[in-house]
Image (cartoon, rainbow, N blue to C red; front, side, top):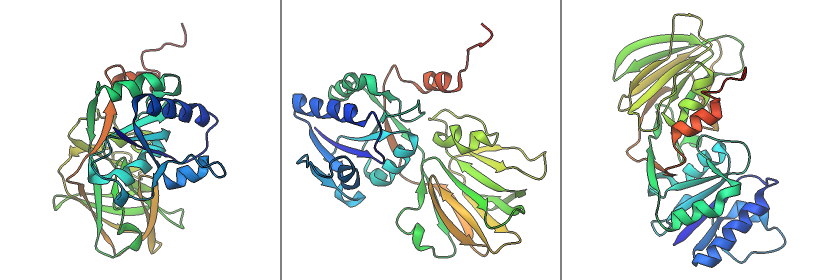
Length: 292
């Protein structure tokens, strides 16, 4: 077997996590390949003598699993490496409980062995693609999002107007601070904090959630995942912000945005005892009564 390993930051628990991964690779004869930036972070003066990769182009179908060490944000970055290669992502949580990075650092060896024995399933996650009428160099290489595409005001405290069409039919003009178009994966993120619904990962839907709308009767709406969404933005300023997960770029008001489902999915490694509902209860403390 062959595993890719990626992380963004040095966590206080990182040494223990890496020790578990190296011990597992030695016992099972699994090849470990580190992302170059992460490798330089953890081994600046003491080379580990392992192979590295630097981009999406250096990954291929020979990789069985892509291990992401960190939180949910690290998994969103991991998706930019995996893209359409269908390499499953396994999230090892180095900090607090996450919706995507669900494997606790105390049980790494147990779950890695389950992966080795192929005792897991794949959770295929919808991906949104963004296309613009005005060329933007920052979107040429990575123009997709696993969580959400969001529109936000820029350089102003005034609201923006987001004219919205679904499959060419006019829906609404949102007077708001912005708009979030979320996948089921992203429904527990920015959209949720703005009042959007929680969707199960295998839901065939998207959520359009306004950010601080001027009209209080403007509510989040759930639409089929194969809907093509067209957005036209106007406001007092000439520019606005577009965010794809954690990647932000600036667009001009004359740019028309088209958002639609990508033909590929991002696969997450799932285990029988780490279900989405279980994570949801633990994360949001559902079913608990602090009075007792």
